[in-house]
Length: 146
Length: 146
Image (cartoon, rainbow over all chains, first blue to last red; front, side, top):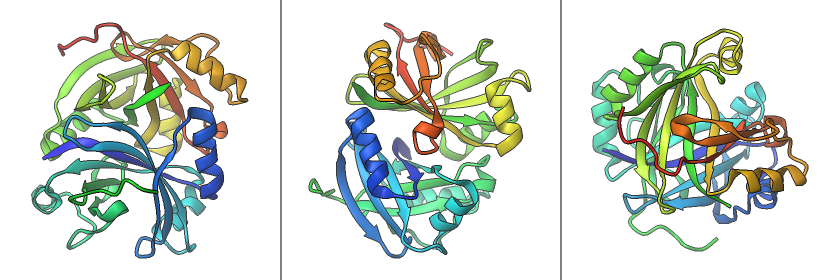
């Protein structure tokens, strides 16, 4: 069961400049940052609010580490902007299988590793009215450091 | 001060079909629906979770009521997908003025009426790394009916 908006994934050309925009304009601070080599991104998570399921909602700022990554190709085609949205669930395996059974294409055979040790998968945007949609199960204890 | 992700605005060609997709795929239900003639949209709000500031996060599904509305033009150019993101604040007037003073273009001189009696304004996407960004102050008592 999907119980929160976990994050909004935003693709950018320059992570440091984009982080600075969000800090200077809105006061949002970096909660966590990492490089995900599998996804080909350098990312910063800005925590915006806590959620009623005990989790949190973030902005996820994404800079590609290579041009041929999914985000790199997307940026080249679309320019900066919202790349995907993500819903949080306690059980990404069960939920993604149930959604696959409804005929929505799930992009990974098994969930992979996402931000802060989470487990993630993606749904095909053409099956979701144009929205690249991620499902996330947070790690049992999420990090609290940068 | 911006204290939550208030909603993600998603443009679609057929509101009823898109509402049905979100219900059948994820179990999300319509919390509220309305027509905003000023914005030129028919919309459905799907409540996803409560937030730590006492508000909530929604998906806002938007179908244009006329081709020359902002959402109508956007859809024609981009197809279905994420149209904007919105942050919640207790005081959209003060926050939008402070952001304007930082050199970000605020699209309305004064906030206008948004979903469920809220007061809203938008920031120019070219000043926000490609993201059309809305600021929202919820009505004192938001409706609980459809």
